[in-house]
Amino acid sequence: MKDKIYDLIATTVFGLEAIVKRECEQLGFSDINVSNGRVEFKGTQQDIAKANLWLRSSERVLIKLGEFEAKSFDELYEKTKSIDWENYLSTNGKFLVSGKSIKSKLYSVPDAQSIVKKAIVDKMSKVHDILWFNETEERYKIEVGLLKDIATITLDTSGAGLHKRGYRQEQTMAPMKETLASALVMLSNWRPDRPLVDLFCGSGTILIEACLIGKNIAPGISREFDFMKWPMFDMSVFREEKTNAYGMINDKKLDITGFDIDREAIKIAKSNAINAGVDEDIIFVTKDVKDVGLKNNFGVIVSNPPYGERIGDEDSLKQIYQALKILFKKISTWSVFMITSDKDFEKHVGKSADRKRKLFNGRIEVDYYQIIGPNPDLLK
Ligand SMILES: C[S@@+](CC[C@H](N)C(=O)[O-])C[C@H]1O[C@@H](n2cnc3c(N)ncnc32)[C@H](O)[C@@H]1O
Image 1: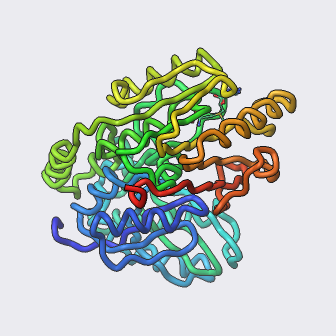
Image 2: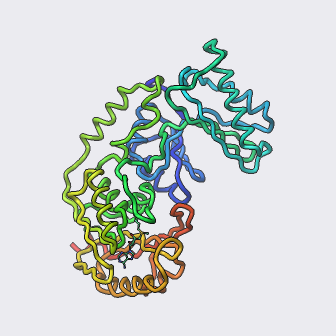
């Protein structure tokens, strides 16, 4: 089983496929293919462990067990039953089946789920000669996805979404998912030798993710994954990967600062940084953005300012934009990256972005405005 090659999928939210692909390439995965919301690749159990431990912006890692046309429930049943479930599931495991259906003849998701579950149980029954499964032990999250009559059957190796690193025990009002925060840092091309600032740090997610990147800490190093409980999985492979990951952490000195007007948010950010083991790497300061001064030293700002839809009223937003306008004029050597749903952001801060990228922060459609400052290396 250790050397078996699996078809794997790293799922992503809309707009982050290219970043997850880049991460997969950096991890050395092979046969990488990108489509909407997924990056597919081939890999061994070692790669499953690696992907879960190291992927920063992917949502979860799935094993693709089957992909086939299914225009009737009979077809769905037979083809699902033909999958070698006995090589993945144990007789004590809990088989949880979820589903989705888009533009398919089999549009009833509850029916598709029950058919898939029945096919799995019937196959396991036949192979193991057992009539009843107690389903008391380890969890197997199975999904049947129907898209234009093509069924994709997957098994989720991650369990809880990969954004759940484990360090964010407390959060402020509008926290950002850890996976998105790290993607924003990666998209900024920030390097650990440059100062990094979040002017509106809230629970500290962007900066904590930056520290994990800067110190080469695997984002999944402190959490559990569903595959760890599966008898089919060779845990020595995982232990080896985890030991390697610990060995790869560096002790680079970072220059990272977080500001927020809210004292309570700063307290939470500090406590999250402690949980993530990076509290010594970030300076957190309670400060209104209008009082923030920065040295003109080629730093990078990555921020998620308040925007009307969730928090912040019109008046305070006006003041924030005014403060940003003044600050941006003073820090001509900095690069600025801001994610907001405000379509008039550039107008408000008096600066045009060099690049814009459409993303989603949860369900909110946002733009990632990128104002690229001079490259410090070219000035040396
Ligand atoms: C959208 S939230 C940032 C969430 C953060 N990225 C996270 O993951 O938790 C915006 C933050 O801006 C802060 N804020 C609002 N007005 C501010 C101001 N005038 N100066 C500094 N921070 C401000 C709020 O307290 C809030 O924490």
